[in-house]
Structures are given as structure tokens and as C-alpha cells.
Image 1 (cartoon, one colour):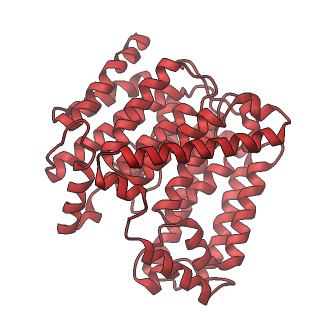
Image 2 (tube, rainbow, N blue to C red; image 1 turned 60 degrees about the vertical axis):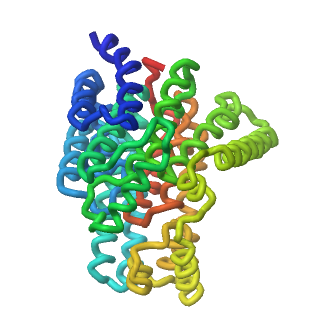
Length: 433
């Protein structure tokens, strides 16, 4: 019965995806499609879905929503309860991962103490703490559970993505465009944002686009893939991310696909040919740049092509962040310092944010912590392919997000995902892929 239900979604998902741009996929229909997946997915799969991505309404879609509404927090707690056995396993067998995130949070806490300690700064640091801890548990479960199925998790994410589309369309009364019209969703949301307090909306175009990006990363993180399923899920994810018009989502999907099929080969990680690795990286980047140039040139959408070319109106924020760093190069201005000086939340770039709020000292130590964790011989990201996943693709999706539109409340997830890399003991089943 479970297999039959799962196979039905090879028809259901594209119907829902196409229906978004035609106008027949309602929120009730999308939610009705999501519920059966919760009954045919394993407990740990649902737990990771709830904790890392939060479901169709809570706004944690990119796994990191800074002003999380209460029902999003409830979903995270439900996921936490469902993964309780592996939470205890973390305490018993991998206390180091928990210790690392606590050390990082304590480190950032010192910069909070020397910062402006405004209401914004306090909220920012507290959010970093609970979100960073929750995400360690979520990624640890994703990596260590033997019952999580990547395809099941991908289905949940894609259908949740459709739910978000339908919910936002219903909430603000959007007029849908055609299947290949990739301007209408983002354009109408931005018009709505200019006229209202859009911060009050639980979901926006970025959330929808990043969820499709994460779904792509999770499915392609498997080392063994069926060509037919790759085509199916990539077509669905690409259509969703293009319809959303989120630049970081589009950018992330392209990078993930190119890396997966040019660089991430299982034999490469087990070989000793370092020169070959470097050549593959160069080839992968070259193919990516070529593909991106084609997208920009061929896309019949001024809105999407302009965002991909960087016309986002955020240059002033980056310049302001650099100026703050130059004025405070050693220790920065402390957590919340950017907002206190510029009166705007963050510079939309993790590196600039670290530099202007923690200075060279904080940036250097943060970078060193991540590098050491990634490349430790017995637990680094390159060694977990001894199981059956390319976890680095998950990190890639997160990194694209935090380098485009994010602050440390959300970016702390990058640290959490790195610290959750434990060893080659990690497992991710491939029952359906």
C-alpha cells in the first residue's frame, strides 16, 4: 500500500506544480496532498521535515526563519520529540557536535556583550542560540538515521513548497500567470510588500524558492540515483524555483546540479589523485558559468535575469558593512552593530556581517572552526561518502542562502550543519532512488 501511495505522487506532484501557474491548485488541495505523505513517511523523516523545514505554514522553509511564529516553534518541538532517540544518541555518542555549537554560541555571545545590546541585538542572539541548537539535532538525525529516505523527504518538501505557493496566492490575492511566465509571483509579492507590512506575512517568494533548492540538494545528495527519477524531481524543482523567482533559489539549484554531475563522483572522494580533484572542480565551475550565461541570455524574464545579474539594490548595504568594518577592523561593532548604525537589519552577506560585527578576530576564528570541522580525517565531510550521501551539497544550498540574503540568526545553521558531520558511520537510505 505504501509503495502504491508513493508512486501516485509521480502524477500528483507535477499536476500540483503545473496547477500553481494555471490556477487550479488551491491550498486545501495542496494540503490534502501533503497529509498522506506524513502517514507513509518514517518517523525520523517527518522529524527532519518538521525541525529543518517546518512545513507549509511556519515560515522556516529555508530552515532558518528569523522571526519564527509560534506554530513554527511548535513544529520544531514536535520534530524534536519524534527524533528523541537520536537526540539521546547525540548526547551519548557525539557530544562533540553539541559542544562545538555551544562553543560557537558562547564565542558569539562575547561579541553580543561588547555590542549595542539593543532589543534587535538581543533578539538576534537569542534566536541564534535556539535555532543553532535545534539545527544540530536536525542535521544529526538526517545524517545518522538509518530510516530516513531521501526521496520521501524530497516529496514532502516539494508538496510543502506547493502549499506555500497556494497559501500566499490565497492570502494576498495574486493573479496567476502561465506555466512559463516566471515574473508574476515575485512581481506581485513585491508590489504587495510596497503597499503593506509584508514582514507580517509568514511566507514570501524567497521561502518558496529556497525550499525547492533544499529539496534539490537533498535528493541529489544520494550517491546512487536513477536517471528517470533525477529528471522527474529536477523538472519539478526547477519549475517551482523559477516560478518563485527567488534569485538565491535559482542560483542554488544551478550550482547544486552542476556540482553533482561534474564534481561529486563517489570514486573521486575515495581516490588519492588530488590534481584530478582540482581539475574536476575547475571543470564544474566552468560548466556552471556556461550554464548560467545561457540561462541569463535565454530567460524570457527581465525580472529573473536582472536578479541573477546582481541588480538587487543591496550594494549600498554591502558598502555600509565594509565601511563599518574599516572603522572597527579588529573586534567589529558587536552582534547587532550593523542594524544599530545603519538602521537596517543586515548586509545580506555572511562574510561582510562577520567582519563588521565581529571584526578580523571573529571572522578568522569562525572560518578556522568550520575548516577544522569539515576536514578532520575521521569525521570530515569528504569522508562521509563511505556511506551513501554527498552531505556537502546540503552545505552548498545553505551557503548560497546565507551569502545572498541572511543574517546570523539564520546563518548559524551553517555552523550547525557543519558540526553535525560526525563520521563515516552516517547513513541515509536509498530505498526508492
